Length: 112
Image 1 (cartoon, rainbow, N blue to C red):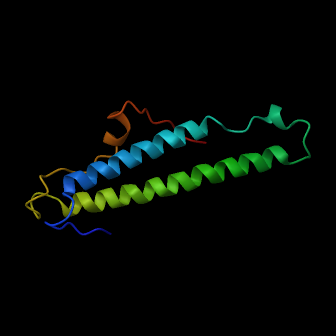
Image 2: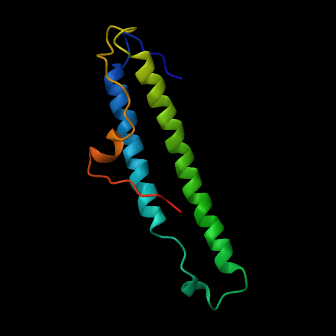
Image 3: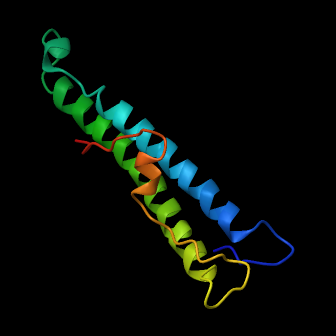
């Protein structure tokens, strides 16, 4: 986990960087979710091909969600470290998950 330091990037900037990355990942997850396999595309394939494609799709989504979860944990950690009550350069800015989704017009959807 990063340590907030007077000689490093400001905690507000670190938090904003993580929020932008989270918003980007959510956009990627939402877009990827829309590419879910359709059974019509697997009718002429060997038995089980559609189920395999579904499993591979779920795995891709899970990997992106895992990275997003890690970044959210980092953002919360940075936010806690930068709390104005304990760190004078923090500015009191707290991590808000919803800010990652609505600040750039990204509307969250529930992936598969």
